[in-house]
Length: 367
Image 1 (cartoon, one colour):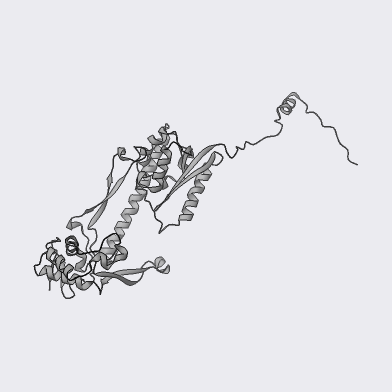
Image 2: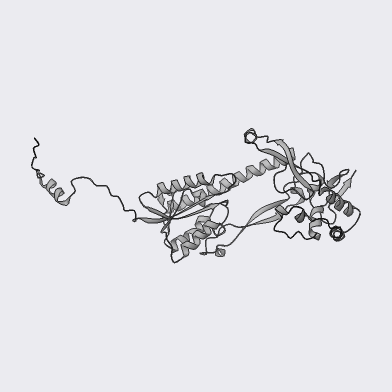
């Protein structure tokens, strides 16, 4: 037999008040799914060839999700692939789209979150972006600040400056180590360091990679050797120049003999060129290329970043930090010439030495 006991009223004035207010049991606040901030996520990977797009995006998005848990939901995602952190935000495809949406009248988000500072900024890039974020009342969330950034807090501003310097230093250290390794590989081994082979050469297998891990993955070295289809043309060009003929006359005779120009001989890598005829500048470039001496000359040119003023930014001025890359030549003293040499394309029986590399007198043959 079941006995139903009458419900006992809570005793004491405090319990009676709690029963009336319905606060007898603890309740946890759970915001509705539609409440909270509307977040836009930004991420980036430097290269698509040496990084896994899926895993990199996943860990960055996971870090952003953990940071913004119970504070809102994501409504937009911007993820740049194959873009260096040195690239200014207006020059990144997805970041530029984010800036355009941020300045638009139909903006769908209230806050911006990144999974890691270094994925988005370096140097003073964030300093250039802060005025735009404040103008449009967009809050920035970073894991390094454990939430939204307070741009009026001197301690957080100092932290952002430190993160910017550290991010830039990380790039500088990696660049120095890579350049030092390339210098050693060129000087001691004469190794081909990448890029398309010059006209008259081709890339062939040079054995397993000296790094055991890379060799286990199947990577192999490659080196330059004369191309049997085009090497004879390069030898003829150097022979004609040594005989005293002008660059213009050499180019004209090549066209009269209907010799395919470099862009026509290799259409797969020169689809952006017409490939119609030999140009004077093409012949001059071949005569001025020290690789035709049979040596892997390195450090002939350098890429430098042209810094642009903040007023040069696209959507929302004041966001452009960085600039464009400019290729400039180095002096002859800065060139690095390896101790070992490869078989020269320009002459099979003569050894060419470096001597005043100019289009008019680029090489001198020595017995």
